[in-house]
Image (cartoon, each protein chain N blue to C red):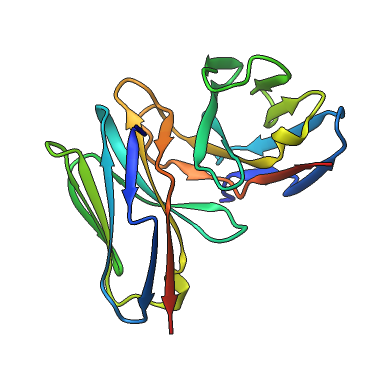
Length: 114
Length: 109
């Protein structure tokens, strides 16, 4: 029973390129959360999704960032026209229900913008 | 003021010592999580608490809802316990987590 799978583990993008981060939740988990950890800072909530629905995107920057969790396949966090300030570790977590029991984190994607 | 405060920010201990990490929060919560993060590594969920006390191996987590405070205790600490320990809370009515800044623990042999 694989845990939360994130890929790639490391991603390097030049300024202006697009970054796509993928997250496959644990089997049986239908709730997905994305968090960002900037260098030397704590984790911050970005977005909460269920299958085909964005439930809460209050932590997402207004521009260039989007997320989806399609009926089939992994959840995708997409960053368009990346800038140096987007360099961070992006973590995905999943849970089986709204109560949060079984909350499980992935290993993260470390994005470096050069 | 952060919604979740952890203390101390850094701690160095000798192997075998009893360690306590504190977390205070200012919002109403549905649950509190203790997480562990190794350098360059992923995040492991240690405990999820809504009341009382939980124990797993050498780790014990307690929460006092009235005082809005939680502690994570490590008994007989070991160098492999060296990591950042993060406290996070679920806001009442929301599933997203709000995190403390973490406490970096170093256990020397």
